[in-house]
View 1 (cartoon, rainbow, N blue to C red):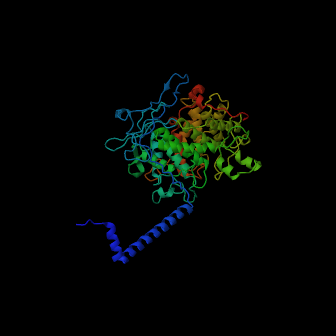
View 2: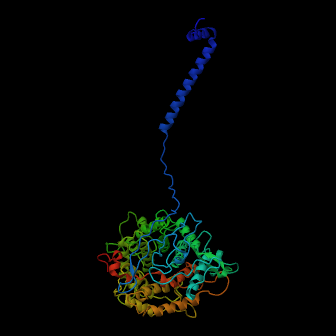
Length: 571
């Protein structure tokens, strides 16, 4: 049998079936041409196409569920002789016996805003602990501050420790009742949160949403000042809502969440432009939240806010160092005048500062400093230089310059009595939290100015000034309160009594509607924030005695890292 030869078979096939070979050849040619065309076209398309590399928006990871250990803060002497020191313990294990803590920590259902295990810390400036795992006595002030408590197993909650604590809880309940569902507080939307047929603010008053960041920060600070941690499960009863439970930690958590969502990439707050009152209050709230929790989520946002606030400080007109703050940020002024020479108009704007905004900025930076955030000494030095320049030897301070010391700061509600010692109180606080010098010659005459104009409520209620009362309380508590090196309470005692009498008389303490616990009587400065501003700042005033450590008791030596001196050439 002959063997099969493939080449012979192909020749026979081609000879016998030429049309098959031609068809195959034609298909092969067509396939080759198509392949060459497609390859050429594809390569040309890739080479000629103009393209850019697009940076995808950075997706922030959710907050860490395990926090950074808090650093032990500097020892703060409670006695003038520096012999009695209290240390803040760095960590209380989660298996600590329940009898030694105030409350289970955090919100176990939260994976976004607060972890389920928070190491103890006071607020950044010394608040006690109400809603977290921490000692019952504030490690800074030495006074009990547990006014919310854990609540009993039967769900009945706890009662306040004193009539004053009850009033603070009523104020916090009013704030919780009027918090928006998105976590914010807004004077413009206050009516939405009031009972049907009731209103906590006059209907004919026009508010705007421009101050929501500041009002939200102020309200959150009132809760933080009571020691409530974000996510804490502590609660208290709402007498106006049939004793409904208010979970204080949720109120704080939602308020902070709203602030974080409304922070701009550069750390500022404000949809259209930063307003420095808003910036300072929101910054302070975030800084204290971080100081109380150690949560990195709050740390990153607080540091961005601090960085923007520091960059917003005006330069010193001496040409050396920094100065105070004003409504607008320095960044905004410089952008507006970009390329301009430093003419008279530019100079007026860039060096413009006021004592009020500067006071809030210093408070925010002090909170940040005590929380372990980065604060530049030159920013505090500039604030001190500005406060000194604005002041006169007789204890008076001007709003924007020393020539205006004692002059009225005008506004929409000038029919109210103006209290010029308010600027003196602000200057006292700026000095206390920057220089820590109890021998500052300005302090005694300033304290006398405050003592000569004690809080009071006249028949027409035109003497009311919650802002003055807050800063006066803070200044005199620092100057000669129970923990101050001076002792004696010569100025603090009468001031505190007058303040409590006035505030407790003005608070709505009866009834079962939404007004219960709020301060609804306006003061000179309520035109922007209404009852939300009034209630929050008055709660903070009532918390002064356990919210703040005494800056002067730190002593110059202990406070050396925070010591500042004015820039050379500043008055």
